[in-house]
Length: 104
Image (cartoon, rainbow, N blue to C red; front, side, top):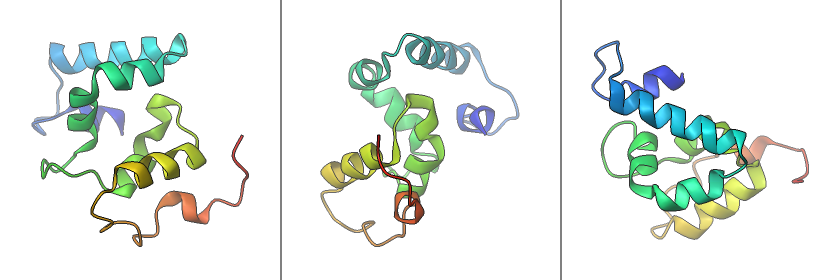
């Protein structure tokens, strides 16, 4: 799943730029710096999550890749709500709607 996300041009391989992005994400995760990484590298992170290149990130994409940045479902819900200025995906039954577990 991560390989497919990093294979930006769908050629079945990743180049150095994509490999470097993966290493940086893993290092931020290992050092508990995911939030700082996302803030400092917001454009590349946005581009990673915008799988179809339409300059929008769906709730499904947020849910699918939240593990990369150690985002809990409640945090994801709040984050998506804060940035969904159009409100057009609020009713899309995102992954957090089905999770009965309480936030930590």
